[in-house]
Length: 170
Image (cartoon, rainbow, N blue to C red; front, side, top):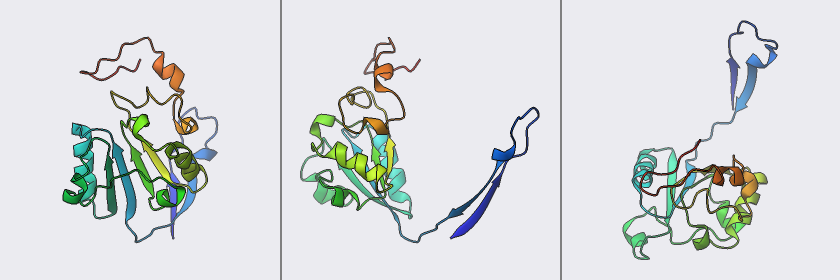
C-alpha cells in the first residue's frame, strides 16, 4: 500500500478550500491488469489501441473482435472466440474496454453480467463511442445505468450521423 497526499493551491475567490486536499491509500499490485478489448470491426482506432495495449508490460490483453473469422484466434494469441458468457468468466478480467460493438451479436446475459460485474465486483468498464453502434443502438440494453450520458438525449441531438465522418456532438 502506498499513501498519497494530493493538494491543489487555494484559488482566489474560492468559497470552500477544504476539498483542495485529499489523502488516499493506493494498493499497488504486481499482477498484470487483465484487460478485455471488445470491438465489432478492426477499425483504425481498434488497431491502434490494441497495438498500444499489447506493448504495455503491465497489461494482460485479450481481444474479442465480432467480425473476426473463427480461425483468427489460432493466429492471434490475444484473441478469444466468444464474449464471457457468465459472471464467473467476466471476473477473470479487471477492465473491459467496450468499443463500437453490435449489441445483437453479444450474448443475452452479457449486459446484466456487465452491470453486476461493475456494480458488485468493482470491475472497470470503458465505453468507447463509435459511428455504428455505440451509443446509438444501446437504448434497450440492461446496462444503461452505467452509461455516462442519457442515451435518449444523445440520440435526439437533431444532428444527422454520417458514417463517413462520424457523428457530431453538439
